[in-house]
View 1 (cartoon, rainbow, N blue to C red):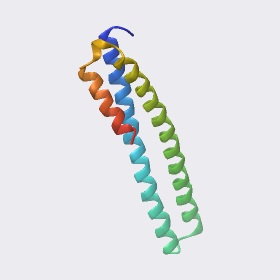
View 2 (view 1 turned 90 degrees about the horizontal axis):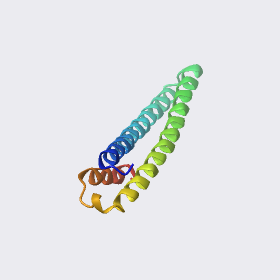
View 3 (view 1 turned 30 degrees about the vertical axis):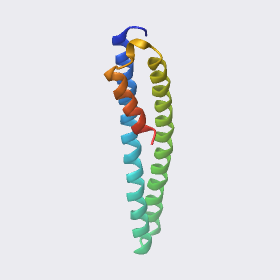
Length: 111
């Protein structure tokens, strides 16, 4: 992976993965909040036990998806961080635009 186009490609791919997984993680968190409101509403309205159980199962699945997306995001951020550090050590990439974009994606996803 010493050629510049190959490095650019890897930076783009890993940056895109980190951005996509961050969006996915945020969406799952929003879904869990929405589902929690739904469960609370069902309980407040004395809904049937089956409806409450069903809503709780969906909420639990949302929490599992948050955990899964968090794990995948962490791995993607780690991969991107390692690649950025390797590329930064090469002088030909000192002012590289793709490297700057990858660093921005890394900063966004690390939050």
